[in-house]
Image 1: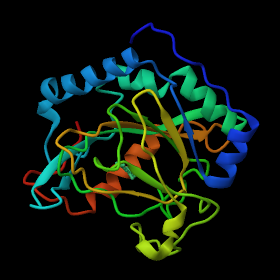
Image 2: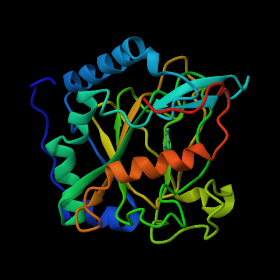
Image 3: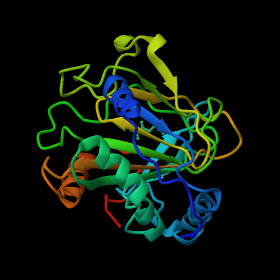
Image 4: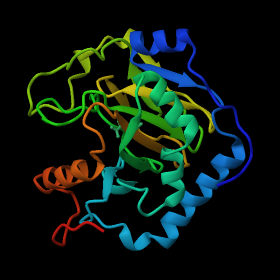
Length: 262
Ligand SMILES: O=C(O)CCC(=O)C(=O)O
């Protein structure tokens, strides 16, 4: 990773209050541009050197339909730090960990991480809360840090969060993950339009969604998610084991071989 210095952010009491009130927080210029350039090069490398992994039957990968043609487009690696030490270093970066731990008032553990490429045309995500209702053992302290690798804009389908809904589940039906749009008030929407170097943190119950990528470039974001140490300790391996079991139950468009993970 680059050695250039960047701001070591601290959480002011008004940031902390804002996070508690809204369920999300934007912190500007946490990383220097040359650090993010290393991450951009890493994304390019992964697409070329690890193209062997990109397959609809590989549980590490997910595809998203093109918003107009429906063509399945490769969209993400989840997890990614085991195939990309650099992504692992960002997930463990002291600036990120320091912010997360200030929010928790506790040490944190990396719960999961994913690298979303969001290629041109990829449909976005419907409204949801990350913590699935009824998934016992999913840590209530789950929160996600969004590390943009490209500018995240309304045109390329940046993440949109809805403020002040993170105290509870919006649906208490375990079969419902994607929520009806009218579960939230559109006036509480905040577009996470961020420049590379900025980050956002959002609570696992903060409802969010994203629009299609209508630009001609990828919108790459590294999402790293944590839990408080006192909320179950290190659960990353257990999480992925259970996640894969659940993924095996879902139909995967384009899958031709038996499902595998590598
Ligand atoms: O790609 C995005 O902007 C949102 C991703 C998302 O909502 C998710 O992975 O849960």
